[in-house]
Image (tube, rainbow, N blue to C red; front, side):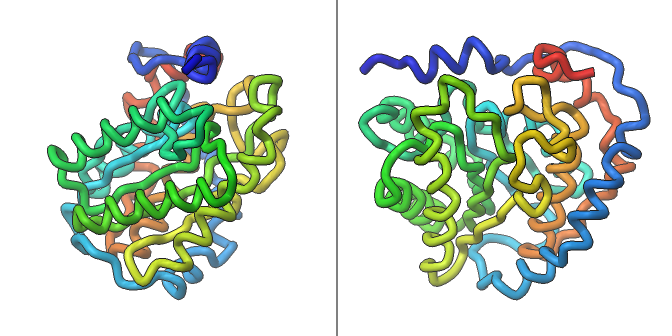
Length: 276
């Protein structure tokens, strides 16, 4: 198969590496408006009402495995900092130019690579929670998407872990993504349907409660490419996610003041995106 998706993404999505840059302490202040809006939505209460009992641990010492594409990868540094501060062990399995679990013909090799990595990491890391952020490569019919997310739920259940299916921020649909805009649009509906059909342990987290649905909105706090988060957006997402994880697994998320201006802000992924 011709791996145009991976090649195209690698030209616009930065690899995982680090170098030091300076990000002002105003980062925490920049989060305030977005976080207040998200907290005011009542979504945390809704999650408690919707949540069924999940396998895995509750309280401290959770082990969280994070999956997705480069959108998830750019959010990973903030997530790791927030999880570490909250006593949650974090492992990043996101992938630049891939990361999807949906095995349609066009992205079958990308999905195969994800499943192979996932099997290995589940065995070695033994997660209590697997969180999959829907990717820009979840191409396929709604049935193929539901089959993939159901397989992921089964994998998590067999490992004794809960599964969180998390939507990504709204993205600018560029020339590369345009042929797959409709497939990307059905992925959240497919994920929500799988979570609703599950007896327990599978939860759908709609990040539109944080980001909204407009890719041009300033609240998204993303880079000029309209796809990847800058530091402020990554920190806002990590805070939002930590609150939802806490509601489902009885953890207390650390306040952003404890981690949001840490060394993670110097990750080279941000500077390569032109984030300041």
